[in-house]
Length: 389
Image (cartoon, rainbow, N blue to C red; front, side, top):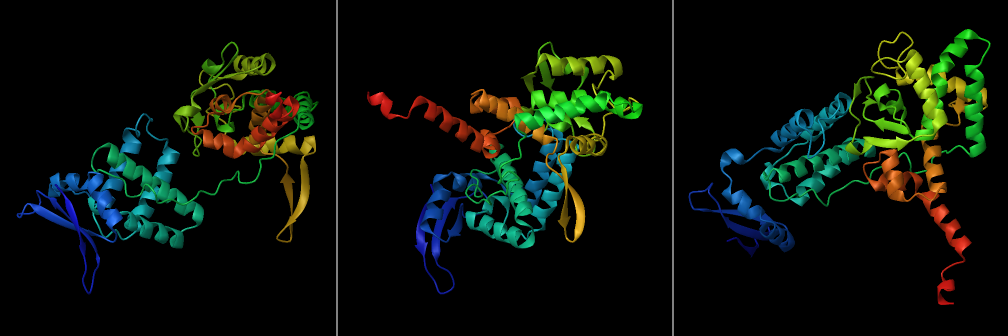
């Protein structure tokens, strides 16, 4: 049974917890905390019992815990997830190096919340806010994995966070119906160009554009789409390209999904797959060897589409004239989401269709549209006082 007492002295003041321990000959160990609240939490969480019952060989260093987490991500996958893709693993390796670069003074079992607060301060001083947030997020993942495997009894990092900076802090640029029609009409014209090279290229790009607008798939998903995923009335998303242009599983479990697609877009994709596709890909490279690179698709397809559709303008940046394109390929995904909202689909349906792992992402990107649609419905229905009549 653990107990605590107030400790005062010239050099140190705080609250000391005494608990049974197999590590010491006396049968007891002591741990000092700055506040009574921390001492009480240590006792009530079961951490005192867990630490006392562990043997010296169980006392992992923080660096060892990080290495074990990285190995689990690579070879097993955390929880119900699959092992991470190579590109994601490269990111995790960088974050692991950043975590281990901090001068950890205590073992994993000895960490307290104030240790994590100091780690957070170091991250914010050492890296940009975005990088610091990502490293701390992965540290949370380390601690959660260690807790799941009962290596530690509680997670002292649980309440220590850095708010992420979202690329969607500002509303996304969504094409209007007229602008989307212009994009599709331009793709039609390019596919029927008198220039045979242009027509050949857009025989492939045109069905990709139509499919993207009618399915909301990410570019990395339709570039890696296999013919077997083209179903009678929709598509199954089962794989995607990573940053190294390698095909693998989607980044999250939620990204594996079925999406209903209209007959026109689906028919175009099936026609192209039958004529030019391979056993593995609906839209392979022109020579049929592997998947198209995203950056090649941007240069040879999307940029030309934006120019021909009139969505490019010149602007000055740092004294230089550069071309600014109004939309990215993700604009087709945003248009798809906006149409679901227009059709009064609920947020959970939209989350599933877009493959968002967390509904908070759906609200982060499209919350302003969902709220606007809800306001319009409320105005049409005449407010809430009608229920009193």
